[in-house]
Image (cartoon, rainbow, N blue to C red):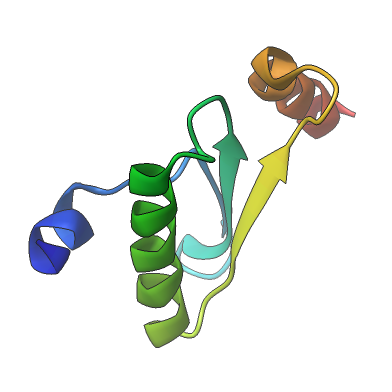
Length: 80
């Protein structure tokens, strides 16, 4: 299961360094409805473990007031 998850899992946003061979430097996941359920927690733990082994940090963003607007808010933050 873990090997399969490694190859199928994704993150919502990756920021990369265009002047250093497009090296990925920041990784973000937008937390939406359902992330607090038991199955999602297990997948989040596996994803955290994958990033930890790679020496990377996965940032999770949750909009506490209106979870549906998270992607829209992130898009507007990046445009500023």
